[in-house]
Length: 455
Ligand code: ARG
Image 1: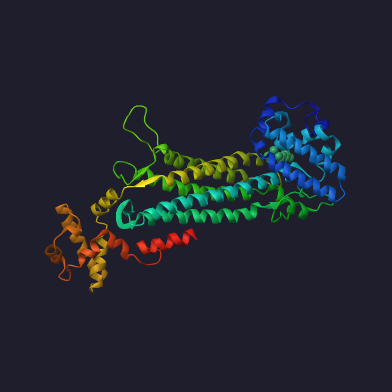
Image 2: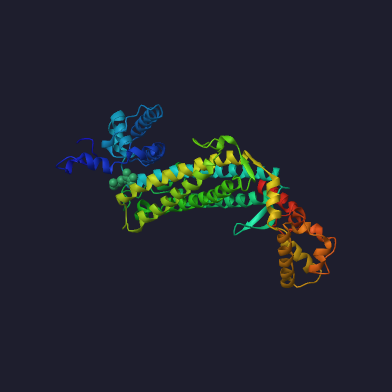
């Protein structure tokens, strides 16, 4: 059992079952680039500080270049026996360059190494996610810009409430994804700090220049306490929380898309390439993509709970429990990235059907509030106006017509102050465009918001 990094003390080899149970290389090999980057920064600093020779440094660089090539071309042989990505790469380095490879781990532990690798990897993934969020926002802004004048019923309690611009509804999501971007940018600051130098837990007696390593890796600062450096996974939890919110936003949007494309709404069509058929019912086009996104949100919520629970009982400092941080974190990143990518494409391919939207708004008496506001403007107290309009709605419902279809004499019967100009406020467009307050759904305001968000 020479392959084990600590073998001298052990009187028997690890059992195969334990090997399989404790090994993480099957999934953590995806950290290989971060691992090599971190090692090269560490080695460069060791050489600059005179802890290893310039020749050792050159040998390490040469070996890592070879390993990079081997991994990229799929020729690297990952060994379960070597437990994780870190030991695999180090062992191969030593095989390639001899003693220099064995000197790389001077002043370092896998505890600060793995924390550094995960942070480096996650930092780049956060940047990719921020870009994908921006692309989704752009797709939704384009869809909004094409449909500013389209009136749809806004809902509360999923009951028709008031007419809103379809674009206004889209912009609500653009706001949410904007906050997701802010959260990602904020988490990034705490991800982008350097654990290396903490070594196993207490720091190291070698004269390391931690700041130089941080600079080489483009990190914004150091983890200032060695115990915290190796055992902190807050950054992973925080990231997963931010990812969870982004998925929750996607899930709410999914729920709406699914409703809107059902026959009972008929508000939108999504491009065929995002739907699937049924193996038995020939007429079907199912919204599989939004349904899966809604389902995958549950998975990411689960990862957040998993990570929080992983931390809650851990004493300082590093514990092997933390090896379990990777799969949930990786899957969160994969799920969020795939979902954002597919949504940006899908939103760009949505067709809006204005007729069913308007019909639904009429059927739900979406302009009832406008009639009340009309009476208030003529001097009635709002509560009285509210009551009067309720009677008018009841009458219209009984006749099976919209408020705007009641003749003036009928409307006058509810209050003498009602005149012919009432029909302006009873129209869907009129109602929508009356909501001129900042943040309101009037077309003019919506256009301003689109311009601001495109900024
Ligand atoms: N594979 C381990 C992890 O993912 C690396 C650190 C292991 N350190 C240790 N002392 N066993 O956390």
